[in-house]
Image (cartoon, rainbow, N blue to C red; front, top):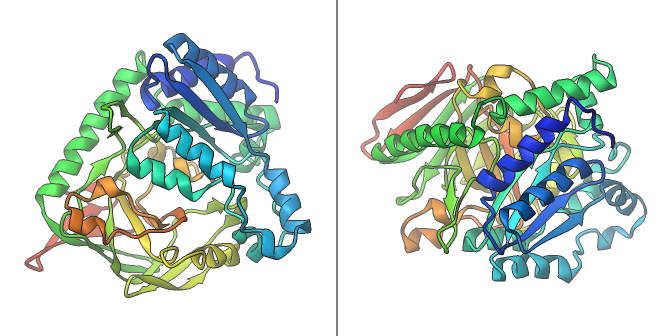
Length: 404
């Protein structure tokens, strides 16, 4: 991939934000970067920024989605769920060594899985591995995920523009939503996270037992565990390293009760899962389990993933996002979960987060799965209401705006 000279400052600025604020790399840390072919400029800038920060070693792991396609097309179907054991061992080793972890999002080749049987595509979860969830819940690593614009992704987001213009536009949008256009992006993000922390605190003060979503194609009740708490995307490791898991981030989220989800929901944005595009997603829940999964395109991929294990068809996260976010106000559909989920309220099938629950007894009830797939269900047309333990309703989001 070539990087135009007018994009170089944004690449360097994003790398600096990733290292200083997102992962918050510490002196003498190992830094692990997960990337793809086509994202070399940002990976190299992150490595340079990490070494300037005092990193001991920067390790790069590259996953080529074209090999995933080759596997789906030509490997024996009964081998598609196999994951080499050293993949998981690496994740656990990063936790043992208290490493910093950086990963990039954004589809390099959005069409690469075209023509692949969706059910076969859904059997292979790589590059995701279940041990990564374990390490996140153990809070042994300071980690972050950030977008990396590429020509293939730009073409998907801006198909009406010439390739160079589309890539320039995507970089401009990513720079804006990541606050790289501010004099001090780190300070700007610290201010934004302070605001989101305040929202989470006000939600906690309501002591909600459930959250209800109502809108076109959506009438969904999501129960919360007794000690579920609302958080924004700023975490601390067991060693006290504060970091921002998502750049950008505009959400407040909680860990739901996986047995108390009922109703129907219609996704408000498309999503990419296992290299496949899913559009027009519709899901019906009964007793916490997704019993029907339909879509205009790509439903078989998510159906296959939802059968991965006992928890793959239940919820592990519910997140609220208001319309005032920089991402939402752009109105751009990025076809990238990291960005699109921070433009709209969303839920996630699969594993729940331990730090979203305070009491040990409730942690035993958190959903467990090798899967964690977010999809967007919020919009200005979707009303979000909190329900207190006495049964009274509290408006949370109306027309995409906070009512707290």
